[in-house]
Length: 426
Image 1 (cartoon, rainbow, N blue to C red):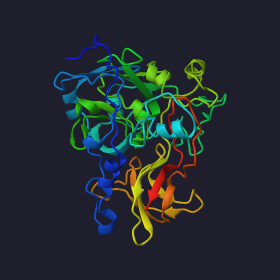
Image 2: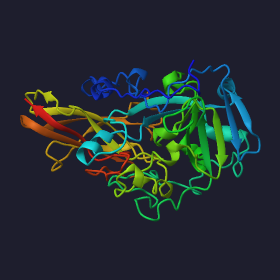
Image 3: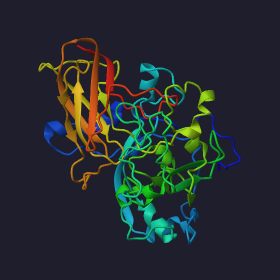
Image 4: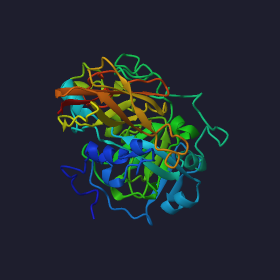
């Protein structure tokens, strides 16, 4: 068994599914036959993995989650108690690595620091477990009771706080200028996995704002199941945090401690990693002066990906002269669902509205604002090489992708147009 005294693996498990595998299977025959897709939910074999440590071997029968900090009644909860002592809530939501699409920023703008994620570090899954809100109420979190249903009138993020919008700037003043962070909430909920050492710290930790944890409409849960089955070890077994609309770095896996307090998690991955620094920060050395001045990433931006055809692919043009293009799109923060995807084959001069698939009622009974949509379009194109296909998404909050995001050192939060470059049509 791996223990905390063991060295961190040089290459922890990090993988993403090929886009054809991730998306094409989901869209096969759906639009042409008018039936629901085989699986709107990403199956585990196609789900991406991001880790900063080895994967611990844990036993749900003995695992305990401690709840403490600024609460009246500290708790120690078994997995069985989390499953049976609290109402269980299910949410369908996309999970994205903050660095998804980093390769595009690296190759189309300039070099960045981080894993070379392509466009597939995203998964759309069903998660089930108790609401974090209910657990914190049981612990007697101060200043809240069961009558406080939605706390957005106290502190709210306008759907995409601390993150890039379509033009690469951030909400709440966090656009690389001196007023960044003024609206950070007073209280936070920190999550810890203290099972194993990580690459940059002795444990993994992250945090979210307390208001987000307590707002019913933000649907933050302690997930025990993924896609109707117990979590697999690679995805956080026996319990992980699920924070819809928020970067995966805050979805702490193998959770063992929850703490309420006035400060964010002090962990490296909250304070010195997943932040969007201004473009003038061009080295890790310069970044040391900027990390404390800029907010940690929370919500992810509106985004879309062209999955089929992919970069550099050669495709045969049908007799109709129309090329079928497929992909997926995700909304910004809590501002979903995605309401429109446009696709262009002429460098953005003209755009065609794509057909959207939100999963249908059997997959998405509440039309989840957190979920991805799959999309399809037919584009009139001429035969030839070096074709570029763009996509741009708009969500219910009016957030729309722009052609490029601003560069940042860590290559996080990229949401320029979805694109396939160098497509050859024969």
